[in-house]
Length: 422
Ligand code: LLP
Image 1 (cartoon, rainbow, N blue to C red):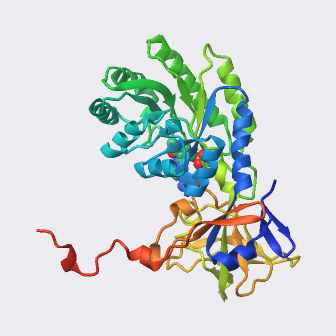
Image 2: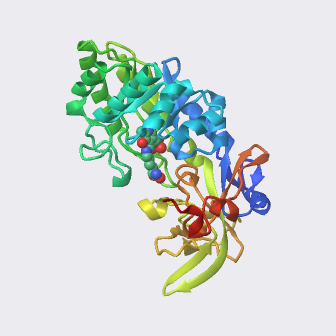
């Protein structure tokens, strides 16, 4: 199923014309296809077949409650990186016993909240964090299941900002020091060793580095078991890339089957956890925006639209290229436009695209914006974060209202006097 296709009256999301959503909800606006989110999740789930596994959706990719609710409804697990994400999962009806807690800087209160909620595993990233987990578990009179996040030192061949498994990165514990770290953790009160984990980076277009890292994890498991440290699961992280309108990302079914087969050649067939984010929601969403102005400067033709880098940061931050198309369908050969936002930064470019001749008020869809789009939106330039809509067949639901100016200033004091402390 392709959820975004042209029909009568232009581009549709499932069975709803995007122009109708724009009229009703306004722009800019994120529009997601429920069907595509479910389909993406099921591709992973089906690929595992009977093999014991858990798909822990990476909440950071898109933590909108309704989206978490859709995934909770499928029985998904969740990968979180903060206490806020834990609360989002809980509110959305996700089972906290399916949660894996990743992240390099968990605070004391986040660790305590995770243990008290009975999460499946805390993926620890430093000896200091092990101390913190142990103290909290003892205080709460609970046992905290942990995995050490291993930094396997493989080059994932992606943008440096989203590569996490290199020796020089802040993430995980270097593979040369992992055994000592497990020994240390095993001797700590309140801690129960549950698994091994790694995540080497995001938007990976080749599974070779992932397989390399997976094999290193399995070697580690053998060594740990040999030392009497019992490992119950292997968490391979997320990271599979998507096409962004060009070469499609790696085949998910093939990747999962490769992991299962690799595991099959080992002594033990341990349950596998994966933490996909982008590949679940990325191609299920578009950012819908409207042309405000058209102008040319030098040799460039600009379409100034009402969405900016505060709404979708990826092009400005990573030089990411998203396909941009018009909602109106046209056979016009087209011209090249720089599609830019209203934010006062030269980096506020959503992309360049060959588009049919634009007119003021035309609607534009920035594709594959479901992951790390709304989740990374900000209020820069005192802009209100966009509305979000989920389309389900012929119906659509406003799942996040556009922010209001009152929301924006709600936590601020007007005068210095009101906030004075001695
Ligand atoms: N697990 C861990 C521990 C992670 O750090 C991440 C992503 C994931 C899973 C999910 O990875 P995915 O399947 O989505 O590739 N803002 C960037 C991406 C940052 C990814 C951070 N970690 C972007 O817009 O490209």
